[in-house]
Length: 235
Image (cartoon, rainbow, N blue to C red; front, side, top):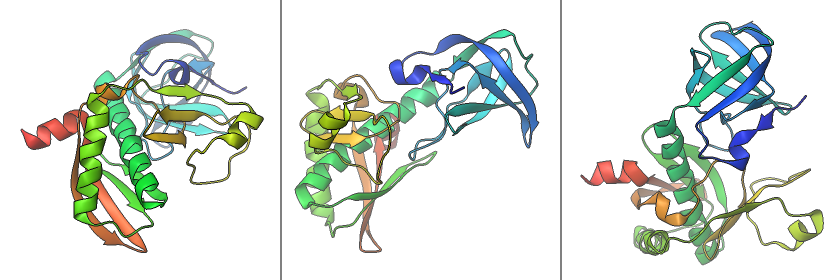
């Protein structure tokens, strides 16, 4: 049975209850399966959520065939209803980084008719790869436009279009997709197939700051910070 993904419906949900379906020893503690979860599993360049599950520390989360596995530091009783709590500061940081990346990537790909061919959200910075030759001055112009868009506080639209609707949408995607496709749209800036957690409106990103633009393979690699990370860097 696939795990119900509470984070898709409400990325601001921090506390929830769920039934424990399974708990098995793993390489680093135990792997717990729930009937539903608010913990985001690593994927799409975004790291997993951390937090607490029935007093056990959740140190990693990943998905396999629709089932979300929680790596915890001690066993949890099968059949029990447990309480989970998300590490909110980590989650919101990831939401700011990922949403800021969408805004920057959407604007860059539109302006330079290129693709985002790589995305990694590290513990310190975010890196994005593009298959176009973009100068530092051109990147800084996108930074200025992205921040203007953020401060205008546009609402974010996330939905699952029908197959017919999807076929007509000019959305970005790194690979061919099957089944229901989740579209994340920052109106006027980006439309992308994405399963990550995002802010409700662009203003919640706060700020984007580009750190570098370097030649990488057939294009460039941008390094950037968003939200609190950007503020801390500039303080």
